[in-house]
Length: 101
Image (cartoon, rainbow, N blue to C red; front, side, top):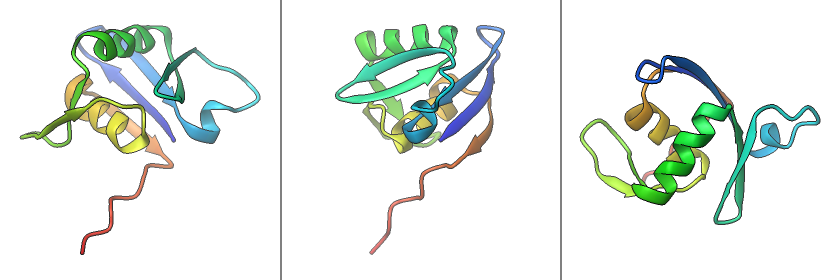
């Protein structure tokens, strides 16, 4: 998955790559690894993500919650970017919603 966005609070754009996109032949940005999952992102987002994992490791799954543990799996990191960081502009290869029923 590749996510690009703009963080109004930091005043900068960001890119996050997960899965096969993070392991692409051309490394871009910094690696962040947590619980065996590695993502690549721009330096500013990497710093924000490391800080969140250390100091407030939760993510909103929707605008009204609930808060869940912050992990680097695609669904959770995408929710964190959308609801905690804000400014998601585009997502390529987004995870499918979980099956209901």
